[in-house]
Length: 337
Length: 299
Image (tube, rainbow over all chains, first blue to last red; front, side, top):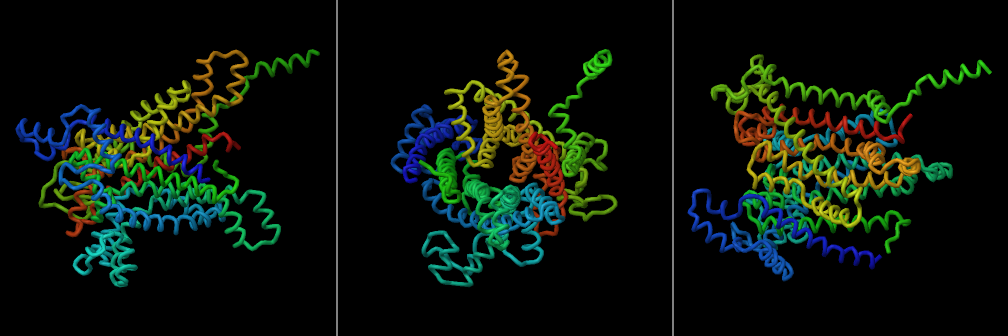
């Protein structure tokens, strides 16, 4: 098992090299560069050339790639062309917001999606099953920004139940102390401040629902089909013949065996969410990596786009590796060597 | 003897009623109510997009600021927007933008993706290895951000949006076609065709491709749905058509977002519903096709 993990991690190195090469060629192949957006359209060619020289953009592409990779190997992810902040610092500052939002969204998705899928499968063909199927199809079809807008309008503007902007009420609570940016953890464990924690949670609810709806629908659909497949297996009939209670059959025999495709889709969806939720973050002014990379794209900030995408893609690959490893736990027949 | 000959002749003369995969699939599709609902929604969407100039009650670009944010009434069935324009007319015209982007992006994605996937699957070897590594890389990139980056650099507008979404689709189509070709290359009917002396090109075109394309058709139908959502998302972020005379559903929602607190909430509802219905249509049909085209489910 350990050997397998090490081999997969070593395999990550050529993938990352390929990825970095792809990204840098891709970004440079597109028209425009950071200087044109920093200096604006009406600038002199001299200033443009000076800016390009300052950022090293006048060098040949292979030289730029070499310099960039040289920096990466030494742990230097580069500096933003627009605000001169280190890319790694910006990422570390914003990633906790994305992690909290993604996990909360997945909590919504798994907490509702799995029971919904199981219940629908066990009543296959019933009114409830049809309702769940239609509801999850609608869930997949709703544009995230429309749902976000609706939620913000109904629960924020109209009913005044929940806050719709930001991660915490900064006028009431100060989070500059510990600086981990994991506000849930900081408020509950470090500050031990319950009202503060509840404020953070209340800010999280609407974005998490908006972001979690599509994964919820996907998880419910996969769960339903996975459970349906397992329900027809001989061992489930055997378990029933043995006189086991339904609860025990469900938890030990059905769900445990249906878990493989469900775990795959959960891993995949989590990986996708960690890639940043540009639209949700925009609507709820959530300062995560999505809005950060969105701004970098708007500014044509090459280094931020390259390093940010590289970090996210690495995370995505790592999440997938974790899913693969969890297979061995979920299905003892799978042995990695 | 004579009667036997007659019987034999009858058997020989009577055409064998074979039913192709497509015919079977068509029949199964017609018996799936959800797919029919999907087909109806798509039909409505295409109908509206094509006939927008005829059926729109108002000019979608003309409006006066005096009539801004009017609630739905007999004159304006769905109300008016920020600039006093008729929302119904803008939604009808907006269907054209969505239809255009979805068809263009999926067609473009299919052209490149199928080419890469077919080469990868048929040629194999190191060509396959390198194409699949590029596909892996593209699939590990955060999707919407990739699309946004392309659109930012190439300039906003429907065609750039379609191009960017197409690029996102390429690795998906390529991988699906490749894996189904690989599976079919080893199948019994391929071996059977080869053993009766069929040429390789004939095996590819007549035996492998029709079967390999079925999962691609399902994926393409679902990709049409994703394209509509993504295009609206990009429009919402401000990368839609910059010419205000081209209504686009996502862009319509942006205006509302800015005026959310000033009593304009209802204006978001209708473009949003339009997006959901058209996307739902393609998702329903895609689901139905997936089941109809699966020969294992043949009853």
